[in-house]
Image: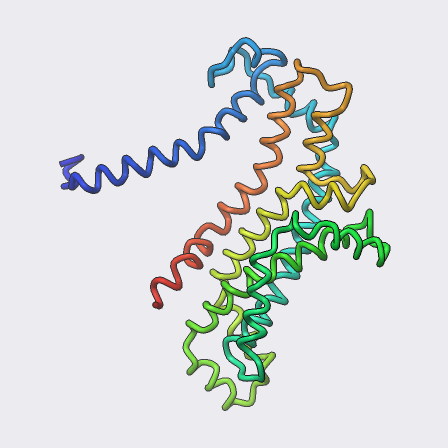
Length: 281
């Protein structure tokens, strides 16, 4: 009995295990936050989580030195454009594979899924050559295009399964009323897939926002640096010494906060998207 409520031993052990693993997952973020709040140079002496002296000036210094507004703007433009394009094109393709009958449908679907086996690092040379050929280097398109191509297979896989789980009667009724296929997709079916769209958006957006390799290879202009690239260059600048160790962690915190906010806003749809297949199966 806990506060008048009967609790089983199994439930207590389950919740204890979940809390333990949750703490393990969040502990690195707590270390980064603690270090970012310490006074410059304190982390070399204080290895604990509680700062001796809290200094919010670290965030101000990192904000100015790394030019966080520019980094955040570039990351937002690339991530938002990539996610929106992936959601639109993948949902169109997934709807076609789920609801339409056409020649070689399954072979084409398997061809799309073959893209899941491609690792970005393995095709960087051809991607770079394509961008050179079309003179796209040092532009947003040099990053958005590869992110779109690499993100489509996973998005199509998730969305096709969700479309197939929707009742066919809804679509049949719309066809009887004279709605076109695109109208059915856009006005009826797509709004019903919001949980799956949120799941795809979080996964693809997280990978795009945190990616370092592609921006490093495809851009050389300081004005096009994204947050991960700016973080690495911030550490390598000659003016940054060991006493500014706290500044780097302050920048890491500023880099992760937008992701946390987006997840908190979409967590309900995200969980619905993850469990929808199990519930309907």
